[in-house]
Length: 420
Ligand SMILES: C[S@@+](CC[C@H](N)C(=O)[O-])C[C@H]1O[C@@H](n2cnc3c(N)ncnc32)[C@H](O)[C@@H]1O
Image 1 (tube, protein in one colour):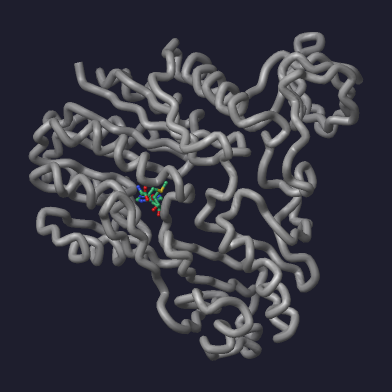
Image 2: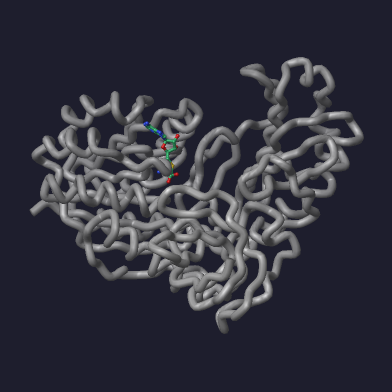
């Protein structure tokens, strides 16, 4: 069927309408006329595949990556970076209006450069014994790649030696995780399906150095809860003068250009306020708690991942702080400590599911809280949480888009709420 694409919506699809029904078509742009095939026909909407562009948008470009549309990673490479930003601003505003019932301009857009490639410091490759790369969109078939343009060069350069190494030693991990720091040092984690696969691993770091890269500081081979480690399990990552220990199992912000700017923007909301106590929920390795320790009286970070909490505690020492503490707990369970701590400011940086009604309802009972800085990687759950926060008189004052994920539809933002 033929469709006119009316707008671009969160999720990375163009959307067109016919007889009251919405049609989602990836890899399209507003204003384009396209021919599509319906893949899934639901009650109020259809998911479609793009077959032919009848009328091309002037904002369409040839995607720089030769795997684009095969690989499920990037989904907006078909338009120049400046337009990607414009689309993201519109998508964020649209989520705030539709879900958050709030008509709000985006106060600032933070980008590093108009190049917007070679930014990722972390990757998860897939391997099936033959193909090494990434899953196709909505599939677990692997697209074999020899390069990926959004990866830091030093990670990209590992693709060929890694694949060669795995084939030479008869290893077939289902996923290979790599994290690289600003000095291009790396930690690598191979995850296998079965414990018996661990019998084939090469238990020598010098072989890994020779065959893959001398900058690999540590490797773990894992299967079904069993782990074999060689060398270090973590790296040190220096950002804005702070030193972060980050283990291969801990979360860390993926954009090497913008992690420092993200921290500065969050600290910009906290630094001058003279807060006595700041609570950092979903704190990871202390990416915001550690810098906050230099500006607030006391900081408490709450995080459920064991490895991240161990890193966070080490980071207190590495940054010569005494006023920052961490608690290993799920946020939902750690709330009672939040009450005793009496924070004046709360930082939220949840995973994609957002914070949710229960946690927001409960923190609203902490009378001391006057400011919330909410870092979000999902505008839908952010917009939903805006409505819950508004119910408790936390009103959105500022929202900034920080483009941590160029070439993809993903949107990172910092929202600041104050209690009326
Ligand atoms: C988006 S990351 C943010 C981490 C950190 N703020 C940073 O910038 O590096 C979300 C973090 O929340 C943690 N997490 C996920 N669910 C959680 C929960 N229910 N309670 C506490 N932490 C949780 C994850 O382990 C992860 O470290």
